[in-house]
Amino acid sequence: MEAKQVDYCACGSDKTYIDCCGRYLDNGEIPQSAEVLMRSRYTAYTLGREDYLLATWYADMRPEKLELFGPDHQWLGLTVKRHVQTGPYHAIVEFVARYQVAGQEQQIHEISRFLFEGGRWLYVDGDFIQQDQAAE
Image 1 (cartoon, rainbow, N blue to C red):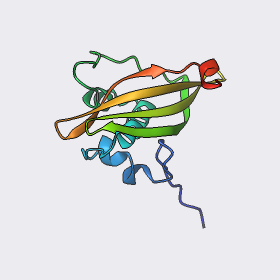
Image 2 (image 1 turned 45 degrees about the vertical axis):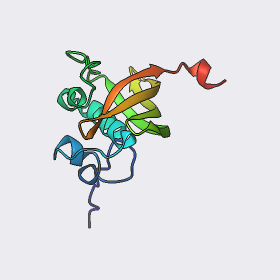
Image 3 (image 1 turned 120 degrees about the vertical axis):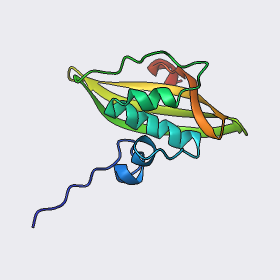
Image 4 (image 1 turned 120 degrees about the horizontal axis):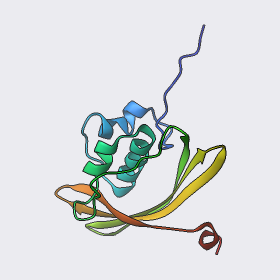
């Protein structure tokens, strides 16, 4: 008997896509925390879902268009280092997203800011952390 393949969500939750970020990307549910929104945005990047990324970006900071990674990039994984709700309408999420391009593994280490507005969390912006800063 052949084993059934399970499609785990790219965000690293150990849940299936449909039970995790698929709820937000495909079924229109609203993430209930900044961390869940950030995980769903990571998954959207892995799937090239510019529509979702722009829709979950705070309007005053949202770019007109995104330049998503091309097919030569492969997303490898996400680690959420911390999630802190700094007030009723503000939160930060620190994460490391790993990817590979041209055989070289690289990472994005960011502290992202989120705002709760209109009954939903929105990505505002973030600060990139350099690898030498992360070691301090």
